[in-house]
Length: 308
Ligand SMILES: [Zn+2]
Image 1 (spheres, helix red, strand yellow):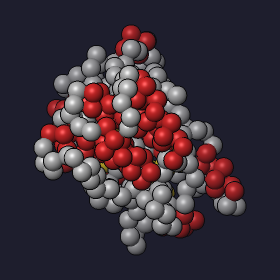
Image 2 (tube, protein in one colour):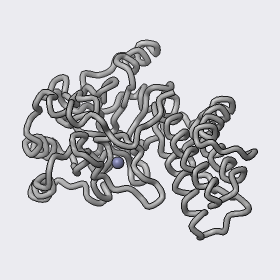
Image 3 (cartoon, protein in one colour):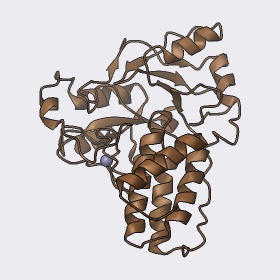
C-alpha cells in the first residue's frame, strides 16, 4: 500500500524538471478560452501553500491544493490572477462549473477510450491534457442540465469533474505534478467539444447507495455535537468522503492513522470513531474487507493496542 507522505521530498528533482510555459501566459490563454482559473500549490515549494481546514491538514499530495477558497476565487479577470501569480511559483486550477466544463479524468492512459470502445463509441477529438497518470478530456456541459462529479456508470479508474453544487476543479495544463511530469495539452488548438450523448447517458445513471457520494451524518454516540472531538472527526470523515477513485485507500489510511493518534491521546472513543470512518469508506465505494484491512493497518501503524 502506498502511504501518503506529509511533505514532498522531490523539490530538488523538480528544479530540474523541463521548464514549462510561463504561468501568466497560460493563465491568459485559459481565460481567453472562457475558463475560470485560480492558483494552486506548486510542488517545488518547500511547504504546501494550499488552504487546509483546521483538523484536516495537508495529505501531502503536493501541487494540487487550491491556495484559497477556489470556488470563490476562480476568475476570468487576468489582472487578479496575475497578482496572485506574483506571490511565487504556483500551479493553476480550472473551476469546471463557471467554465461550463465537464472533465473526464482517467488514471491510466487509454482507460476512457477503452471504455468508449467497449460501448462501440469513439471519444470525440476534443481538448485533451496529459496528466501524471493518464489524461483529462475536456467537454462542454450539456445545455439541458449540468452534470456534477458523480461518476454514474463509469468504471473505476475514470472520474469526472463537473458542475453540481460548487462543482469540481482540475489542475490546469502547464502545471507541474509532484513527479516532475507537466500537465500538457495533446493539441492546444483542439476545441472543447460538447459531451457526447453516450457519455451523458452514462453519467446520468444514478449510482447505487454504495457509490453515491452522499455525506453521511457521523453519529458517534460518545461525541458531543459541536465539541472539538466532533469537529476533528468530521474533518477526518470529510477527508475520506472527498477522495477520488484513485486515492480512496490512501485517504482512508491517512484519516485512520490520525484518528488512532487522537484516540490514543483520549480525544475520542476509537470504536465510535472507527465506525464513522467505516461508514464514510462504504459511502465512497470501498468494500468491507478492504476497509477493515486499511483500518487495521492504521491501528497497527499507530501502535494502538485497544480493541476497536
Ligand atoms: Zn496541501
